[in-house]
Length: 75
Image 1 (cartoon, rainbow, N blue to C red):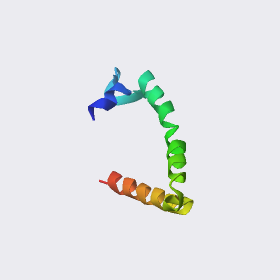
Image 2 (cartoon, one colour; image 1 turned 60 degrees about the horizontal axis):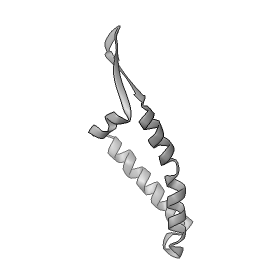
Image 3 (cartoon, rainbow, N blue to C red; image 1 turned 45 degrees about the vertical axis):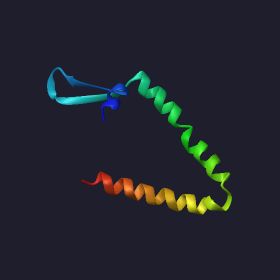
């Protein structure tokens, strides 16, 4: 994921180069702020679909997606 290096900065500690610190860049902070609007925008768009995406169905989908994310993170 090469694009991530634009949003975070990695550096090693001079006293112990085994330690790598990762900090978010100014661009990363801007992206983070922009991303905060995504859940609300998604909810608004789903609400316009009527019964196709009821709050209960959206909640079920959210839980399933988090289960997938958790499963993929366990390597």
